[in-house]
Image (cartoon, rainbow, N blue to C red; front, side):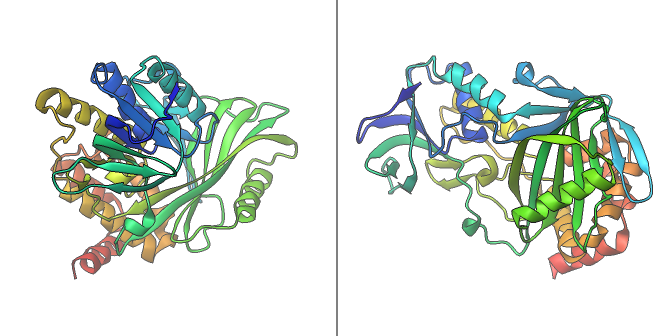
Length: 386
C-alpha cells in the first residue's frame, strides 16, 4: 500500500473518504482494468484495520464478495409481542460480511496496483472552479484531480422535513452452553419496551454459543451509551434468560433515514457515492448492495462513455413510499411493530424483498400497501402532499 507523500500531485481519480463505498468502487474499477493506466488516491482519516462494523443484506444472486461472506442464512425468525413466525427466505439468503474481512480483502487487492495511493488525513475542502479541475485540500497539501468520488456524509448538508436515525448498539456474546440456533437469525424481536418509539432486538447467531445481540431504534435522537447497554442486558436477562455470558465485541452505528433527495453530483466533476449519494435505503437503512450497484454503474459509464457519470433512474414512487413510512414512524413510532409485523406476516418474502429492492410491480405495490394499517399511511400521504 503506497502512502502518498507528494505535495500538489495530480491524480486521475480521488476518493474523498475510504469506507465501504469508496473501497468498493476502487476495487471494481481496479478489477475492470480502469486503473491500469490511471492514478488514484484514497483519502481517509482512519486506518481500516479493525472490525468496526458489519454489513448484512439479502440476495438471491452471487455477489462479488462471496468468498468473504462470514455467514449465510436461508430462514429468519420474526417476533412481535403476540407471536413468532419462522420465514423461509428461498430463493434469497440473508448474508453477513464483517468489516475487517472486507477491508483486508479489498486493500490486499488494491495494494498490488502501484497506481493506487493512500493517505491518512482529514479533508478540509474540495475546490472546483468553472473549467478547472477539482482540487482537494488536506492538512498541509493539496491534490488536483480529474474526478472526485465523495462519500463523506454530513447531516448538515441534508435539508429535509423528515430525518430519522437508525441507531444501534450490539454485543457479540459467548455463552457456556448452547443457546442459539446458528441457522436461524432473528431479524426483528419486538419484545423490548417500545416507549412510543420503534425499538427491536436483532440477533445474528454464528454458532450455538455465539451471537450478535443488537438493540436498534428508529428515532430522531440518539441514546446515551448506558441506555443501549441497559436495554441489551434486560433482553438477555428476561427474554434469553441467560445468567452467564461473556461480551467478546461491541459495535455501535447510526444510519440516516431521510427523504432528502440526494444529488449524485456536487458539481461537474465531483460525484457523490455511498450514503452521500443516496445509497442508504430511506425506510430500512440497508446500504451494502445498493453501494455495489452504484459502483458497477459508474464502472460501466467509464467503459462506455469515458466518464464516471451513470444515467440515473427515476424512482419517484419508491421515494414516496419511503417518505410515507418515515412520516408514520416519526409521528407514530409506537406503530412500528404493527407495520413491520403486517409486512412480514401478510406478504410472501419474495414480494416484500422485491418491494424493498425497488423492483416491484404495480400489483406488488398494491398488495404491500393493502397489508399495512391504512389510516396512518393515508394521513402521512396527505401530510407530505399538503
